Length: 185
Image (tube, rainbow, N blue to C red):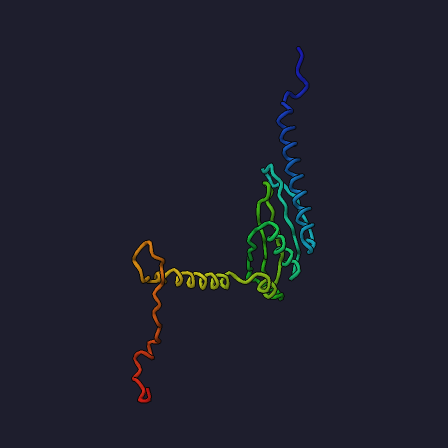
């Protein structure tokens, strides 16, 4: 009686999967090279990796620590058209606190993460805290709502064929309107 000594698993699906993985890797490496070439701040490390259970490769750019490293992340954020974020750690390690500055985006199916570790002072110079940004947005919203609350200008004519001419109404300060008239006038 003869027994089969060769495995009978199909090889085509494994080959297709490896081909797709290699193409994903090549896209990730090419994108990493473009990003490094596009910024004057050189990252400390560029990592092309594939997570467990994933078929797609991703890129991490580690810029290290300090102000220049943070500038590198902001430049990558500009190249990726991504919103940079800051992640504050309340640890004071004798360096003024720890603030991560990061940019994340997905380009052509490749996830990209750029990050730098800065102190609070450098992070504030590079990327103002969220509460400052919220104050600026709130001020802009209040100015915008004030513009929206203005009434339309009254017009002289009601004839649709006539040109519209706004009515000019003099503005008198409230204090001047109620002030007693001076004897010399």
